[in-house]
Length: 290
Ligand SMILES: [Zn+2]
Ligand SMILES: [Zn+2]
Image 1 (cartoon, rainbow, N blue to C red):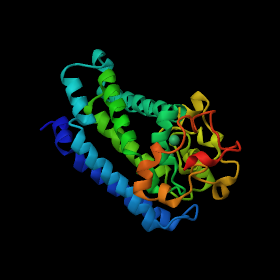
Image 2 (tube, protein in one colour):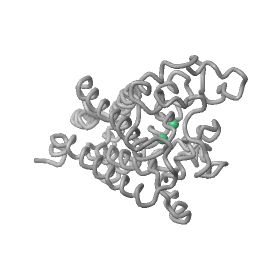
Image 3 (cartoon, rainbow, N blue to C red):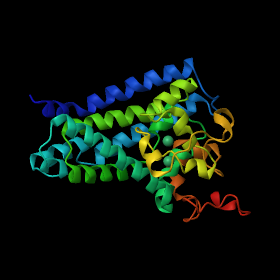
């Protein structure tokens, strides 16, 4: 059996193993060296945030006949995609694919903040008033489907090796859990890690209620895109302990911490609310959130 066949036959198990492995590692780390005190009990947070994860996996299995790995296998069999047109060492194709796919995720993340309709879908991720490992997996089902279609399109155009797609998904999953975790890293370790990886301190800035801070640090795995495109911000103004996390005006726990309210978040408020440069909350009228 080739490596591609092995991956295609065992992909769900491979991903589940990495997901739960990383979850356990980060959960223990958060217990040993926490950064901030959580404002909502862990039982409620974990029950609801992980509830979304199970709902999303269930919906994807039910409604999507293809997987990213399946599409990559199909594309390479048919010679589709830019990388399949060039002769290059396999490992270069793998590294290039992982980097390009990470860049696309960065662009997608900027886009869901910039376009009002997409921000509605993405704000479920930001409405979390705490920031821990489960925040990293908390995305609205509509956003998960949008991500899948963007990923499929990227794979068809790029033609990455199947192995690269699996490596990318595992890295993205693991780094999302790492950089959302409520852990305290020594400043020097953080600044060295930041040269090649998005750290929890770097991504926490992105979860600030302050609009200029939330509209920075869009990267998930590689920190370079933010620096290259001018969206990098070093630290939150109020400091990591004092900064407020979440979305201004969204503080009702039924809406931000419990699954049914979270799922309804895209349908709340006015359509133009809260995209880049169009936020309303500093104005007098604070009443349209609920
Ligand atoms: Zn975001
Ligand atoms: Zn985030």
